Amino acid sequence: MQTLDNFNFTGQKAFVRVDFNVPLDENFNITDDTRIRAAIPSLKKILSDGGSVIIGSHLGRPKKAEDKFSLKHILPRVSSLLGVEVQFANDCLGKEAVEKSAALKAGEVLVLENLRFYAAEEGKPRGLADDATADEKAAAKKAEKANQKEMAKQLASYATVYVNDAFGTAHRPHASTAIIADYFDVEHKTFGYLMQKEIDAVETVLKNTARPFTAIMGGSKVSSKIEIIENLLTKVDNLIIAGGMTYTFTKALGGKIGNSICEDDKLDLALILIEKAKANNVNLVLAVDAKAADAFSNDANTQFVPVNAIPDGWDGLDIGPETEVKFAEVIEKSKTILWNGPTGVFEFDNFAGGTLSVGLAIVRATEKGAYSLVGGGDSVAAVNKFGIADKVSYVSTGGGALLEFIEGKELPGIKAIRGY
Image (tube, helix red, strand yellow):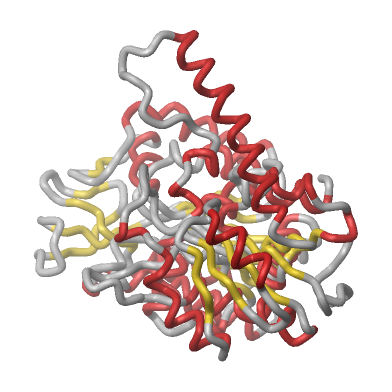
């Protein structure tokens, strides 16, 4: 398989699929440019070789072309980071895109308008009537899949080489993330640096595992993490359950959880997962105490109570000090660590202590030689909030893509390049 470092881009036009889906304020100013900065090394490699770059990305979830989702708003930041003036095509499939791509010279950069302004990018029909029949839906889907293929073919025609550096969309079989790769031979398609780092990080954790291997799974719902947990129960030595999921497991075991978040329809599932952990000799680590509040507010009254004895009217919003110690002891003995999800409502400073404690334990383990991967939007936000992102081994830019990769699913954007 071709790699970015091995490929000479001299005289080549590269279509680079990036993930520039960055947050904008009401004045269209970028509030977090992490995703743009992450792609800059790949873009600079192509330009320094003497190639030119055609950038494709989405922004938001538009159902039609709208100014608030236009990639023109990010041009100044991209230009600043690359150190070159960036051109713009106001329609990714229009005449301007075709002409500007054809005229692009070595060292020049062109950003195409939001790829998702076209339904064909995602391959999903838009505008179907609510009462559409099954036959009408099937026909619309078939037509849009054909449109998707045509869109991919046209985007591919702009360039001589395809580079996918958008791990955040690797789990989507979209025109620009997977199908476009079919129009390039194996020597003219490759991953960007960011994409390769993401793949390497996950495979280091799941395939080249140093033991003990500990996964920390947070989040509010067991239902959203079932497949991840089940896959991890065949791989990890320790599985720490944190966040809102704590209270579903606690109630399943007969505990009193007050007003804490709980999926009552998943109590039996929680017990099944506990038994699976035992069957696989996995140390399932659950909270023993909680920081409870009398309201969902940073200014609420609080008390530390046993996690299985939360008073009526009170809500567990973070782990307690005994659990912090318990989790930290497991984490600091680990050689491989995967963290996805906070221990509580860390957005409130009053309930950020548990998440910070886990983060610092991971930092200490990393300093002792452990490999630590942090992924998922809330976990990434937490390490950034606490200023420890540079003290763990790797912070993933992928959300859904990372979770599906951990689940063991095949990601279309990866398979399209390396064939598996």
